[in-house]
Image (cartoon, rainbow, N blue to C red):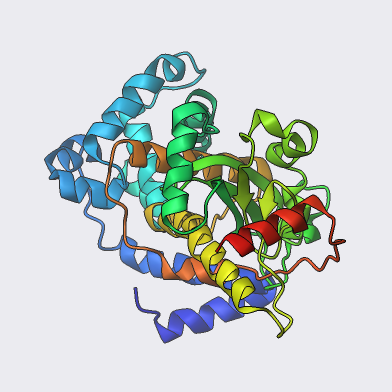
Length: 371
């Protein structure tokens, strides 16, 4: 979508009256307003009159999931949706409208017009559908155990970094300045936009095995990691997550420990073995960055959530992560990687001096020597 210079001028003028970081949202709204003129007026149901005639390929382009997976989702959630108060909108229509919203950057008003409903009804149902997915499909994000854990270790071993169960990293999901947050300014990050932190642990296949969503964008990755259930369990009962000798891998933003391997800090004097260790860890760890790229490519709304509620933002992000895993489980093809996701990556380094006898230091040195 090309930017019209007149739109850009209006966006900057409006942003002076609101918030400079909202320029992308304002600009997109102006572009969408122009595009809405081209939306055909459908007499009757958009789902019945238009979507029904989509080929599977076209359907997937718009809704980001295959028709079969959407039907499975509707079937599984229907009993819970029918019991909700005020659900007069058919679940299929609501589900498709919400998937269209999550998969595209069209304005709510434009999507509402497509599906012959109001903007407020679409917004309310988006939160309801995301809540249903998070509540009743959360088992799709689960920590690997038993044979599954062994298969993951073997896959990471094949990339050159053995004894690994998952990779951890964080990305930032753009939001507008939140309302009713304890400290709204805490969501303004070092790249000068408001965001929430999505910290994720993934296996070798980009599947999310644990996520933590919603902490302020200004928080350091290590600070968010310390708040995760994984970090708590690794500190209190690591055997509940990891078999003996196993570990996670992360970048230099995370604290080195016996259960979390991180790179050697590059002080300009790294040995050849240490450089080789860093290269192998980086290659294995890239899987989590690819997961974020696939996530934002499939659900393009995550490139900018125009939600002022941290709770609703968290529900939408979590629902997208669950749907991502469901797509992997169904062997659905990923969309082309989103190159823009790297722009939302905040490079951080945790400066820590650990004694030579520290278990994490000793284990890292042993792995390094084995290479």
